Length: 70
Image (cartoon, rainbow, N blue to C red; front, side, top):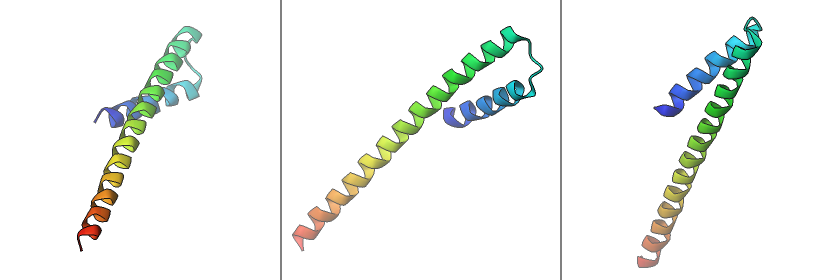
């Protein structure tokens, strides 16, 4: 659930920044927090993609192995 939570927080930060009503110091802090969240989300997506790729390869290898038995 961390990904969904991070994305929600990132959307909220983006909305605050887009309003343009924040003092510069607060806007900079929110920008840095947003960048950290974006990196975290990207890492979580990469991990999920790798996991799916491994599962796909494993399933394909099983199909080949099962096909050789027939």
